[in-house]
Image 1 (cartoon, rainbow, N blue to C red):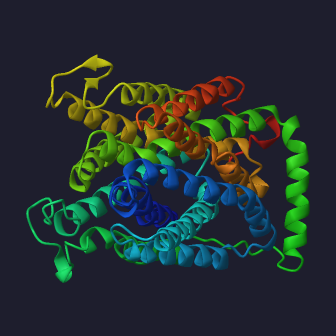
Image 2: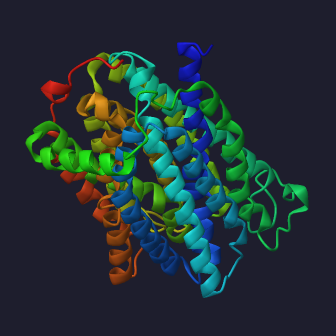
Length: 450
């Protein structure tokens, strides 16, 4: 028999299993490798990456609430989660084919593969987040969510350390500790770095097993017959009622903006460091280790603050912090640090960016952890998967906005540094909408989770 504690550990296992897609692929290893080595030049790579994220984000935004509504109506979450897991693994593993200086067809296929894996990741998160209310009381959820996100960061950190020590090669063809890539991988063909895709797929396939074994993910009372029609009908009713639910509506709008900006930082942080500061993949990996280590501790502490004071103060503090980080990044390149000129060869820009990495790790993970517990407070307990589908919609409905605006400003100014400025505006707009959010949620939904 699965105990309540075992169910929580199984749920935490999903955070541990899926984090490398964000840590290794989206942020610290594959994205900067794509921009600096696969694409023709870093500016073109940043623009292509931005458009890929925009298009895939739009697809996720349209489909996530529909999938959530169908899952709530049919109860067959296990089959859906197996499908999303397969897409995750297939997309990640296919990144092996991202050879240096690739031709346009290969580049297009690599971007498609990444988008497929990203769809699997995001839809899987929708379904697993919906099981959070079943793990404890309303008061416990902040700590459960924060600890899960902290363990996810630790998983990302461990996977990143393995990649840097034994697989990802620098410009001299050796890893961080001076070894040739393991498994006989060819450093000249960048096979050590390219192995990040299959490595991520294998990691997920192994560590997601406790989730499927220990977490109940199917409702016995749901009726499968007519689930699609019933789910779409109930989703339509929920969308029609949404403007009348002031707090929920404001929260979805706020999270739409600030999470889009956060995803922009994750997507372009490593690319920025490679193109503007000239960092190698190994240097970016060290940056990632710092971010993940600080982030793990911060998420655990944020979970305690969430439990003590509620998620809203945690969210506001994190948004302010990340907005400040973006300002610092815009004011830092090889010639200056925080808008102050530096001498040629100064290490101050590097030190400044490492500090920004630690702050991004602390603020980003804590923000996402508190945001999902806030969504539990705002959503209808009887339609939780649909609620997290709407939450995914709010995170992806304008998911093209951050990457597209970064891509557009980068293209217009021919500057990676100035291309980051739209993220500041998105954070600020999200902060304004948070004023309208009731931290206790809609009155009719204020009941403890079962």
